[in-house]
Length: 593
Figure 1 (cartoon, helix red, strand yellow):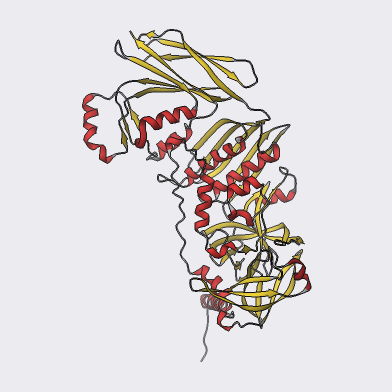
Figure 2 (figure 1 turned 30 degrees about the vertical axis):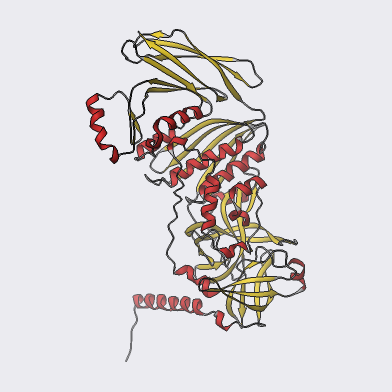
């Protein structure tokens, strides 16, 4: 009897055998229960270039249930080389075998040890990246509108949230590359990023950087034991960690033997790495590596491994930072798209560029014109001036806060298409202090324009003045009209006192975008025109001068809304831009004739 198999049958059989082969590869490992003290395991890693080097591990024992239901193998890496270096950061993921079958991945070490004692994550634990559902990643850090969306503790909140996602065993030394951030940035960004290398280059200085930004998959294959770089940013600023591939199965691979942030489903670019050298250290020796070609992306960041996909690259957020210093220079960088990490990374990008071009602290001022371009054509624009020893941090924090609000808010998750900044630093404090405000008259009529002259003093410069005109609103004779003049912080404090708990986060896409585009700035003098009558602040809006019938109609519904009834209503608010970061506050009262 003859059996004919058509093309479709051939394809089905091919898929069946391919799937069976991949399943067999995943199941072909040595379980922890078969590992005994004194066994010699064989391992592979890259110590120079892209050449695989062999090493041996003598099993010391198994740490059982160190994490619920999970075990770690402890062993000493043998040989004179490792007596000199100890366990090397960058060996994370280096596969170890018993009789040709994979056991697991070198994943962690212990600081300041006299022997090269390593922790090995069993491969059976690494395979669990396939089975776990993605955790919900939402920060819910409560940045409020009444704060002008400024939150000086944002980085600390994110850092704590990241720390809460990592288990206690992560306090051991992870064996990915140690960090290269400035001390201040390292402290502010948290220990979670200490495993990442930071390298800021001159903008567009090499064909490699252009290749990085274009980022096309090379199609190259990976071997078990190959060195890879996992990137948070690419281009003129490279934040990356070097580690090792544990196992390649088809177009998937497993690496590191530990998490980055344990964020579940992610998209981080992956490149092949060339090891320049191994740097011995008493605390922790480490590999120095450079990026070769991009080959894929990390798709799962789980507790006991990261898993990647070959031939597919992630969608990144472009960042352009133009710096007007001695000569204009533009940095082009791309960062991963992640609502937990992107604000941190944007802070780091801006800070690193400004530190490289100007300085980190001291007498410094920075003017910024920035924009967030989002999918659908929406744009958030932020132009301001920051002055003083914390100007770099304050500016970077403001843009990190904006990124956070756009990417993780209760209204809509905006997809950021690009972040563009133009910054101009000065090595002096460009601040100005209000001296006094004078009105041309203090008894006024409804509808007439009243001129005000503001006198302010810039630091180490002659005094200056500005004139503005404000139209008197239609009020009854004998009423009082107050004009509050002040800086952004004074206005925000006034609003907080007036609206208290009624000042809530915007509840629609339109109001959120409007609020973000109208954040008060340091380089503006604000005028708030006020009258002494009760108003309604409802769902983010100030309803001044409501008819009595409407006002009383809203009273019974107060439990259903975000509301407040401040005793002072705002007719209008004006902003006068100046070239300095402004400080000061004054109040002028006018009488209506």
